[in-house]
Image 1: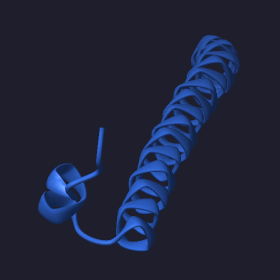
Image 2: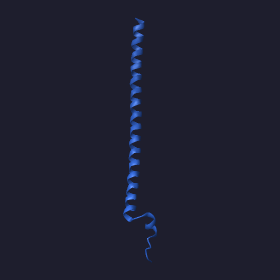
Image 3: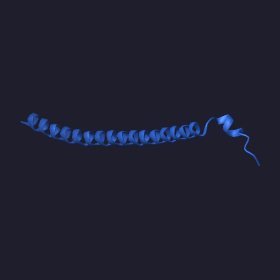
Image 4: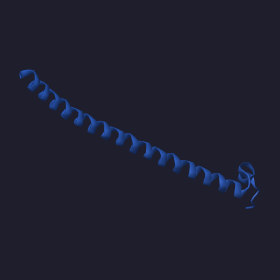
Length: 73
């Protein structure tokens, strides 16, 4: 069976096909890494807001107790 160049004629040179495959792999890896980074940032923001809410609750309770003592005196 002889190679008539059918598929390679459609896709181009072997080097071009290899470069195209490498570009696809790099693009896919980049998308996965960026997606993971965005998930990490989103989780970090959620944790920071949760910590801020806990801190503000403690401050509000303390202010309420101090305000109650000032009104009573």
